[in-house]
Length: 115
Image (cartoon, rainbow, N blue to C red; front, top):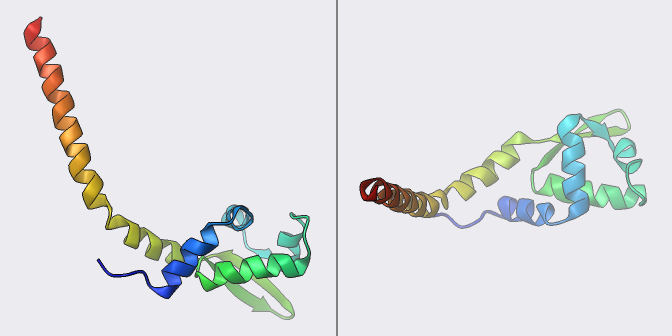
């Protein structure tokens, strides 16, 4: 397994905050300007912008400039990188789940034999 890249580390850190999680849910529905995101929270635009900057640093969102406005949207590639890293751990679950399934099936077979 390769160690975490700085980008993936930043993404996990960004996900650790409930406000940023809420922002990601909002951006999953549509692209939004900083003003539109700010309207959903009881905090300053500067505070919201800091949250958006951390999400951008983790590559969980992408930012597009249009004139003076900046529009934020989910960046699926950032989530894909995290998913790829997490898939490494599937090997540990796959073996344990297969063993659990085999044990359950063996118990089920025994129950039918006892009848």
